[in-house]
Image (tube, rainbow, N blue to C red; front, top):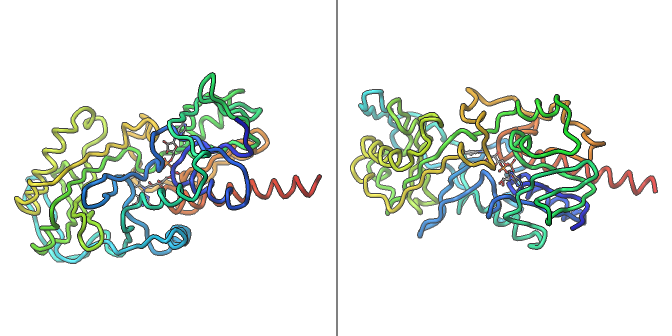
Length: 357
Ligand SMILES: Cc1cc2nc3c(=O)[nH]c(=O)nc-3n(C[C@H](O)[C@H](O)[C@H](O)COP(=O)(O)OP(=O)(O)OC[C@H]3O[C@@H](n4cnc5c(N)ncnc54)[C@H](O)[C@@H]3O)c2cc1C
């Protein structure tokens, strides 16, 4: 296989880059390790609709995501925030209060964030989106190797993967120690986290005057929100696990049962009757997290392109995940920023080449 640009990773950054290149008439092939596109954007399918297992929100002041949503014909709606908030203390006592829902003012997407991925993929040629295509090795002469039989020769290779996951690839020749160190030092945003989702027949907590917003010192969920679709369908609550990754491993069923009991303590016994539940533990997804991500950073890291990652192999090898973005790095907006930056560089290099010839 031969192409102009080989994109490794079919998350939002990889797909947005593919979309930009395709619109500019640049040949590409995209390689995605998983059997699905989207990376950290993923959804639980339920009979009444999709519930986000990765990102749920975007915010005012994020022009790229707002522009993409409009371009793709998707519709946003505000995070549900009417009603009381709850706080569960260490003893399990629940304090109910009127206040400011922590995610009030944030926006969700009708049909879930996965709509971004589905619609981007739908306008790209199917034969350029290679699923179940785990890239193992990259060479300086432009080879992307999946295995001995599957390889692709490209002018540009773009790694649209979390930098720590990129550091697990084999590079020939080996990348300099400062490059490998720079890749490994960048924490993957939210990679150490896990999300528990409970889907119900109806948003019973709303009828009881709760917003669905709760914080807990008891756990296992540390932070809970209404995850329902527009107008409450599908009806769902989600919580971020407060249990460290090391203590979550192999305990999914136990954690799910404890999470339901916690929802019942906070919102009432209806919480014990979900239609379905899911626990998405990103910390144990090899395409997202490394062991170093199991202890998430305390705050939002300062992301951007470290100088060591600039101009590798005469800028033939570039990085494009959200963690490389100097604007809103870590977030979906950052993934779009990275795609924009790398596509501008590739298109700029092309213009120079044509100008020179
Ligand atoms: C639980 C959670 C909640 C979040 N909440 C929010 C939120 O509310 N708002 C927000 O803006 N952001 C949020 N984020 C962050 C958001 O998900 C990311 O910013 C965004 O999805 C990153 O996209 P990406 O394309 O850069 O990386 P990824 O989505 O990680 O894509 C990388 C892709 O590379 C693939 N890959 C890995 N290794 C290989 C290989 N060797 N060969 C081929 N393919 C490979 C992976 O399978 C994956 O598809 C959240 C993330 C999580 C996990």
